[in-house]
Image 1 (cartoon, rainbow over the protein chains, first blue to last red):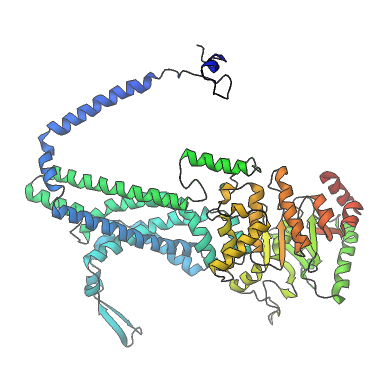
Image 2 (image 1 turned 120 degrees about the vertical axis):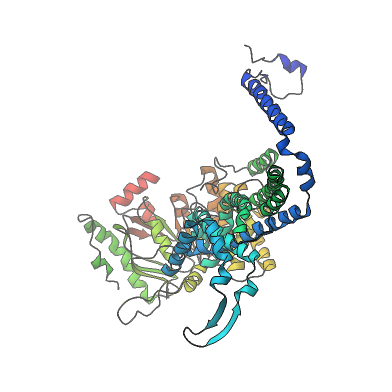
Length: 325
Length: 292
């Protein structure tokens, strides 16, 4: 009832510079307790199910979680994920910039690339890249219908691993191109104008001013796509590339006739890798968020920045006019 | 000089007659100045249309080196558009912009069929790099500190070394009174501080002239003075400046010539005494009554 206790406590705490500080009791929140009890019961039930159900066979999980083949599979999966995301991002950035170009030929090429690679299943594409050395056994440079200057056999330079990486990267690039394009468009037009007024060339404006600011918007969905890619790598058996985590754990499962424990092994590893990737994303977000929000993040830093603005003695109502987008 | 005024029909029939009389003295000095040394900036018959919207309807203006010209007029009168034509952020639909006698954006000689030869973008960028511009909304690069903002163009455009650019940038930030804010990001600066960094950023290119597009309009009233004092110092230092502003006190104190624009035309032009204290046209009187 009485949530305010005026002046009285001031006697007990003479140091308090604020007279009549409000001491309030929270309103009761029974919902928190009820939900806690329900969730606790469900968790106990789940734990009981996991421990007592023999299908899970935790002994086998423990045996194989650090199996050489599995750990190697984790390595290959991680390598394919990282390489195909780097290559895919490079392709996507190129496609997004071409899409914004004044050159209609480049715009058309970019559109066609996105149309084809976004419009067909990644599995189909991976099968195609696996068969690439059969479809295109030899690449030759020469005059069309004329003499050949130089040629090499694709089989020698395009093993299954690279077919998997290129296949995933080209598919991913088509999706990322749209993400990057919207990121580039999200940067205030005033930034381009200010750079132009300084005499910067279009290439430098893009590289120095637009892309670094667009990254702030691009990184969160890029992180999402990376985690998606991690799991899409399980499709590389279509190439066929057979050393990744899913294939390695399936192979063991088939040998032992124990599918469930090895699914759990694979799932735990995917979760672990995802956690690591999330940490990476956090640092990327912090780097590209510089100048937009606190580099150190916490509320203390926010207060110190506000203090700095206040100290300047010229605080406008809106101290962040550059942030509005 | 330009044939465009005939091509573009006058849209508001009744008004041109008083305008014509008012515009005549403005055109007068321009033609008389032909004998004098080349003005740093000369605008000849500038028209600008955005689709059907005819924003500039034939503006002539000359600004000599070292002169401060202040553009005043109601919003929508075309002041900012005229300013943006000077550094080619807008392309004039008709007319010619010359800086130190050099046509901006196009080759000096027209093609045989009468078309103008547009310059390649690298050359346009070079022309722009000689003209500093300060925007109403500052447009600082938010991902760079104040110092990096000022260093960026000298390094990227003029090819200066980092150490040299840094030294010059620190000197410029000191000059605008922000030496102690060099490592702050724009989001950590007040509006007035941001605008002063933006001025330092433009000055870092050592421009021949500076354009100011309502530099104090986005600022809270108590922050206007700190920016205007930087402008005043620049003017006293002999910088050629064109300033679009609503600050009549500043215009009166600093301007060599005041240009009143209305409805896409330069209506009156002269010294601050002539234009602000002894307005000729009813439109200028009305405008001054609304801002003073």
